[in-house]
Image (cartoon, rainbow, N blue to C red; front, side, top):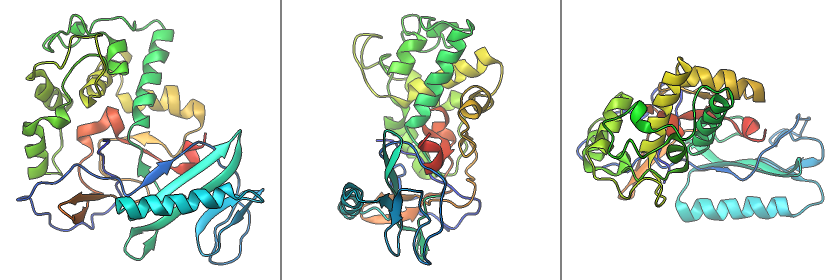
Length: 306
């Protein structure tokens, strides 16, 4: 599971019922199958503007490779997945050897507002790859070592002297995922707009017995990347978001991608829903501060294709 809000610049969710449990945010449906897009060309009214070598599906923001039926098959399969998982919208693309097979936005971001391929959304797990890339850049610059023990920065964590930065990035520390702790879940449920500090999040995990000794097994835990993000900020002597911009995003030309703890997202925005017991609410403006280094990055389909 990768919970995480997808946000915009003004709140439309209204009052939230804090008395019932909320599952962490279920993404409206961002299906990113591969990476690459191209310049657009004119298209008839009511259809998408498509890259050379692709054609629009009428009345859709969708383009498929000319003469290749696989693109239409993928669109049909995406619709099936949306129906099965009760997703309101999906943005996705598939490229093979740099050639666009399909790029599409299906459904509605909000009632009456069609999803479009240029919408911004929170990307979830790919943010971890970005943070790991920054770690490797700092290693390359001889500012940090992969085998450095976490105890250099967080001696209060259980087994911190045995856990290394490489283990944080590879999810092999054994630290309990703070998201799964009842204390965090209840606090998040009570106030989804709350601003969380990294120390608050780390404390939920630090209070738990590790699942296994560092380096002996694997277990997904958002705690790892909250810790890693804090270490990178200290080593780089700058906020994680600024370092990612300078060392990863700008060199790759990812102008539509950023990390922020604020709930706002540049327009246009793909809205997100949280679904619990068959009921849904707009979670677009819930605080993303609880998941910053592990999933709180904003991006676009165009940036993902790079």
